[in-house]
Amino acid sequence: MSTSLASLSVVLCAILTTGFHSILLIFRVASVEENYHSLIRAFVHLPEENLNPPHVKELLQMLKLFAFHDQIYLTAWGMIPIRRGFFLTIVGTLATYGVLLVQFT
Image (cartoon, rainbow, N blue to C red; front, side):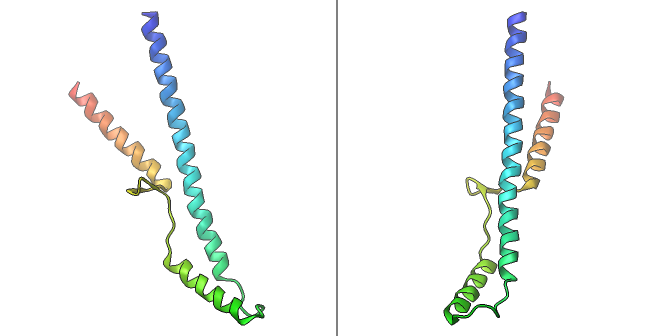
C-alpha cells in the first residue's frame, strides 16, 4: 500500500511540475509575439523627417511595408499558434476528456 502511495505521489509531482513548466512556457512564448508587435508599432511611427540620406528613407519605407505584411508567431509544429488563449484551449480539452472518462467509469 505504501509503495503504491509513494509511486502515486511521484507521478502526481511529475504531472504538476510538467504542467507548471508548460504554463510558464506558453506565457513566455506569447510574450515574444506581443513584444514583436509592440516593436513593429514603435518602428512604424518613427519620424521620417530627421533621416538625411535618401537611401535610409527608402530602406525605412521598405521595412515598414515588410512589417505590415509579415506576421510572426510561434507555433506548435506549425499547426497551432501559441498564444495566451492556447492555455485555455488546453484546460478546456483536458476538462472535457476528464468528464468523459468519469462518465465512462
